[in-house]
Picture 1 (cartoon, rainbow, N blue to C red):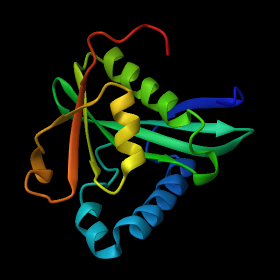
Picture 2: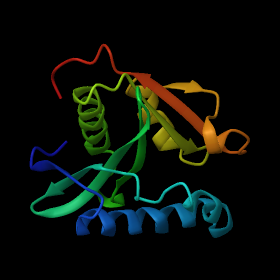
Picture 3: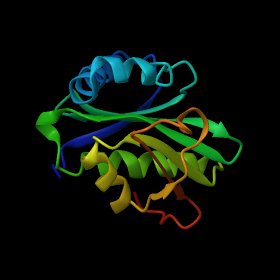
Length: 160
């Protein structure tokens, strides 16, 4: 991965985060179809998100990710996105590691997430980072095509 990447902690009101998730939504509409995405849109609002990481390269926002509290022990990973030009460079892993450590700093014990069957690269990334399949939770319980995963944070190394 390019060492010129800088990660910044912020909040969901940050303009660069808004721009990146607009691109994410366009990307998901293309991959999954507008009809399918209209269902998921209700779960991807940023109202409850308080913790955002944006990756910058030479001052340009190229990737993001966020976490929001699911319960007192669990953070839910939301809105992970890497601009297509910067994929397969390790940026997503770096963001994910920082989000996990941020959750651990705040005393959370695990991270969970939902992704889709069509997001094969995402599933591979999460598995490489130690996430394991779990039964679909909450609003994703009976949703065909949803994949839910978790990672316990207790044994994370102190290096990010």
